[in-house]
Length: 231
Image: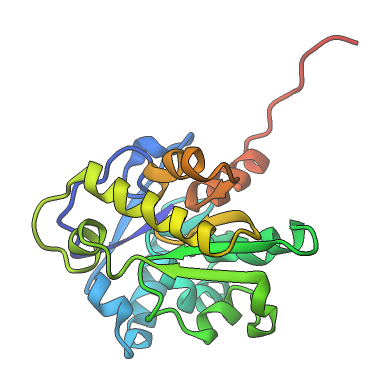
């Protein structure tokens, strides 16, 4: 089900896409050799395409019914992986962006929190179905300059301080909403952010979506349950 980057040295807490207990169905992880945060952020990240595709093919051969990934910047591999396997592929939570943007009323904007705004390119947004012409309807903020999140998940140094990371994420979300009071929903790009989604929602009062929203949406269609109730 899940393609995992190969150099993570942090614990994946519940809610993180790297923690199997996050999901309501059994999950299978496949490490992509050589794919790290620094590599997927690099200008030559496209050189990893064949390795990512092969990992996806292996997951499909092993019975995966959905293939996703830990990092939203994997959107750059979405088209190639989708074309290489016969199961649904959601490599990035950014795929939710056009869906959410179309739900918002006129005068409202979608706020997107990403690991690094400087790394997110117009091509990545286009690959997710979010053209640059959306303009003011989308507001993006990055976590690359935060003290705890960036240290743990971008630079991979020190220890994971969950409370400090949570503060970084919540403070960044609140600052974004204060700067753009027209924001009506928030989307968290990074697969390490879902553990903090509830705290972000409490602090902002807004609907918050992330990788788990996307995957569980598909699972809801894959494993339908009969309705019960009164007539």
